Image 1 (cartoon, rainbow, N blue to C red):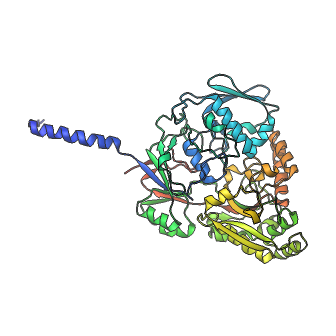
Image 2 (spheres, rainbow, N blue to C red; image 1 turned 90 degrees about the vertical axis):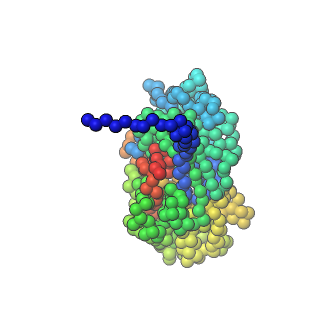
Length: 530
C-alpha cells in the first residue's frame, strides 16, 4: 500500500490557520436559527386568560405551559404535573415534575399553580362550573397540591387540559393574583419559548427566544402533550399588510411560515418546489355568529330567530372559502363529525327562510334601530362573514351598520357590554377549532350564564343546569342525550348560530422540517435547515 506523507507546515502557515480557526469557530457557534412566521393577525392582546382570541392562545402556548396536555387521540396526558385520584373520585393530587422554572429563573411552586387555576376558573366557562364544585385547593409540600371536589367529575382533568380557547396556562403567583377581569402586564411563563419584551412591537412584530432552561417531557410530542423540544433559537411573528404580501414574501424566502393561505392564492404556491402547502389542522374549524343578548334588538328571542332565518349558510361559505373541497354546511353547535353531531333544525340554520324572517321581524319588538355588526378587515377567516350577514339582514328588513376595524380591535371590542349607541355591538362572527368544540364545556360558545358567559352574554338557565348535569354524568348514552338537548336550546334561544365548517391550508418553506400537525399552531418539534 502506498504511503502518503504531508509536508510539515511552516510556522507562518500554522499561525495563519490557527488564527482563521479562532475567527470562524465563534461565528459558527453563535449562528442563530430563526423561523419567521406570518400569523393570521398582529398580536396586541397578550393575556391568554383575559382573552379568548386564537392568536392570544397561540402566543400563550409559546411562553406558558399547562399542567396537563391533550394528545391527538383526545386523551388527557401529564404535562407539568402527574396526578392521582382518591378512591372516592373526589380528591386529585398533582405532583410537579422536576426541573420546572419560570423564565426569571425561580422554581415553579404549587402556590403558583393554585393561583393560576383560581384565575382561570374565575373567567373560563369550564372553570366557572368547576369552581362551584371545588371544596378545597391547597398545597401539600413544595412539589404537590390537591384539589378536593364535592362530587366526582371528569371535568377537572379535561378542563385543565383544554386546547382552546382559554387554556389553563400556569403563571407565577405574583402575576396570577391579577383578577381575571383585568389583563396582566408582565409575561413570564415556564414554557419552551421566552417572550422578548424589548423587541415587541404591538400588532407588528413579536419575538420569542428558545428557553434554554426548559426540560421537555420524554414522550413524543402530540398536540399539546408530550415533549416540547425546541430545535430553533428564535421564532419571530411578523405582520404583513395583506395575504398577497405574505405569499410573495414566502416565495422570495423572506419568511418561513404563513399560518393561513386564502384559497384564491393557492395557485401561486401549488407548483413551487421551494414551498410546501399543508393543512396542519386536519380537523378544521366551524364558523358562527353571536348576538348581544343584553340590549335591543337581540334581547328579544323573536328578533334573534328572524336574523337566523334570514341567513344562507352556503353563501357565507362561498364568500369565506369558495371551494367545496375545504368546506361543508353544518347545522350543529357541537361539530359535524364530532360524537354529538346533530341535524336539529337543519333547514332553518343552513337554508335561508327569507319570507318567514320578514314576517317574524314585522311582528317582533324591532323598531328599525341600527344593528351594529363588528367587521374585521385584516383577517381573511373572519372578514367575509359580517358582509354576508349584513346583506341577509337588510333583505329581511333590518337596518344594518358594519363597524370596520382590525381583528385585534374586534377582540378588544367583544368584551364591551354597552349598547351599540355607546360603543357596543349587536353581532360579531368568528370561528373555533373543531377539536375543542365537541362537548358543552370545551365549546366556549355554549356557556349561557348571562354576564358571566362569553361575549354575547346569553342567559339560559336551562342550558347551565344541563351543562352541570353533563359534568356529573359518566354514562355515555346519557351524556349524548344531554349534549343534544343543549344544542337544541342553543339554536332555539340564539345562543350561537353555526355558519358552516372549513379547513385552512398553511404554507411554509421547504427548509422547515417536522412541522407539527395540531389544532393549535405550535413551533416546537420543527427544525430549520439552511
